[in-house]
Amino acid sequence: MAHIIPYCETEDNSEENLIILCPNCHKKFDKQETIKEEEIRLWKKIRKEELEEFFNKEYKN
Image (cartoon, rainbow, N blue to C red; front, side):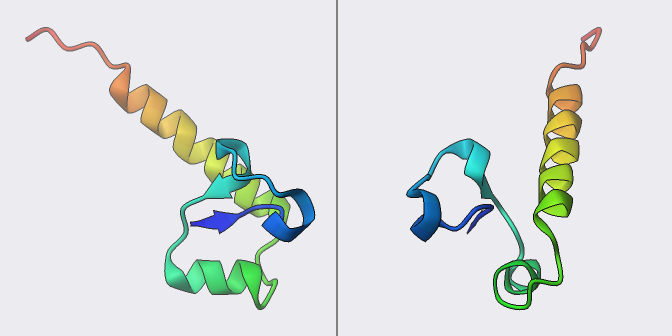
């Protein structure tokens, strides 16, 4: 789990400021800064939409 805006700057542990990342992406985002905040927020938005679509599907049976 990673803070989108560092905790030391915001003291924010809210869902809006957190994202689950694999260890490699976490390192790229936090340490190497090769993944930008805007990209992380877009990933989070897309995953949220995908999950909502998946769990809101209606099945006949």
